Image 1: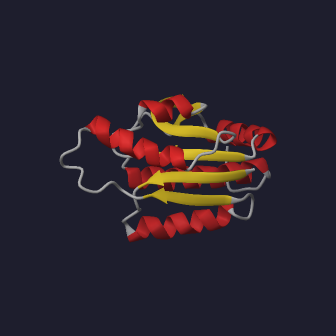
Image 2: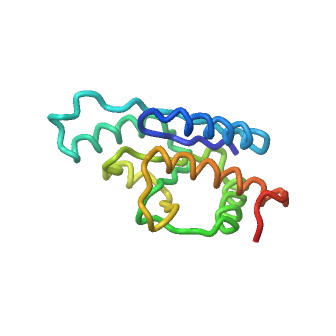
Image 3: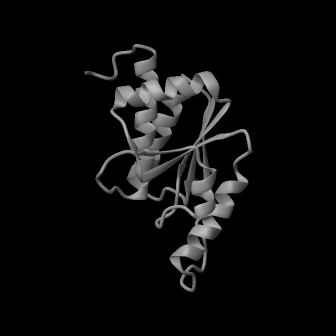
Length: 156
């Protein structure tokens, strides 16, 4: 299974970029994993939140094919422990050819993106910056890979 982390906007903090690169490299030892960045919208001062979500949604949907499995990172999504996430990822590896994990813009997703997604997951009840969500998700994907392989990174 190929997995793509689909992001809106570049990661600007050099420390987070370095950590992301580290985890992306680690994940690559377990499965094909790529990060696709949708450019941040420009000239958004005159756009409403709904208009921004709509435009970002169009860009997100252009990246996804009809057969792809789409999971949104969303505050109202399902919460899982790391071992449950590993079990979930392992199940997806058995049935999906392409998995998209999508982190939207600052206002969330358009109705069209919500309609296209098969699932929503949440990392926490807490709110994190978009920069941190990327890093936390990358670390959790790596952690899930090590749990699936029975490696000692995760401690229960």
